[in-house]
Image 1: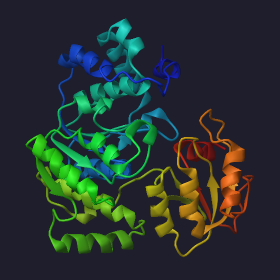
Image 2 (image 1 turned 90 degrees about the vertical axis):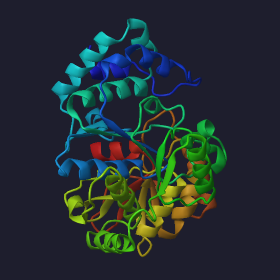
Image 3 (image 1 turned 180 degrees about the vertical axis):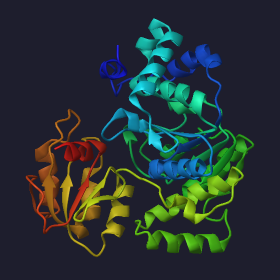
Length: 380
């Protein structure tokens, strides 16, 4: 059975999560994995861009690097990046067969979509890589990626998202993510003060070390990076993400050079795909604030939809100052928010709205709300 057919039968979400399943299965097959050095990334936002920037820096240095991220936008291969490119179909399928031969039939059936693909990626990286940049899927402590030994943990900005799973307060959310830290921790710039305190407490518990990305380098570096980010016309929030990546790069023993990022490719994060269309896969209030800052002097048509469990009301309230009109984009997903509920919020915020029909050349568009919105928009 091909990987695509196999994964199509795997549910993406479970109502009840078995936290022991993956660690127990991995313990049985761990001897098949000779893993290189791992940098583990957890957080609410900026995991993907921070991880890709770090992977790119190590790759252009001449090292073999794997970057595991999720979810994908257009094709599963995007989740497994090796030395500058998404994994090719042939290598992916051969590793899928190899993993099937390692696992018992019972364990193959038991593993979730994300658990199986995590093992798949790690098996790929065993063959090819000097470093793995490993991005957590959801949470941290109980995430499948947390079973692997880490050289360094990076915690990107923590905010509200997935509250039904992670908890309803920043303290709950941050604690769950920070419990994945087992030693050295590089903490990105945070917007919730209590995260700094919780991070400090965590490294004491594990007898680790805490490094702050805001002060890890000398002052001149941060000044130069800010100028460079502006010159390259990146959104301002990328400055912090790149800063964290460079700090990790230096931590691993290399010398930062801004020019190493010149050919970095970031897909789906505040990405301009034409003169008047920007796509962004963000889906939480923190992402909305970043976009508000980026478009602060413009009015955009927001091509938007949301999953029912997201804070779409708060997101739309944040984005209101830059919205000319919301155009609702159908995503045909069982988790999609009911249209009447979305319309009620738009009416309460006095935001003009309609159904999306087509792009007009004389309007500025922001496609935002989830990976599904961006994927379907690009596929139309």
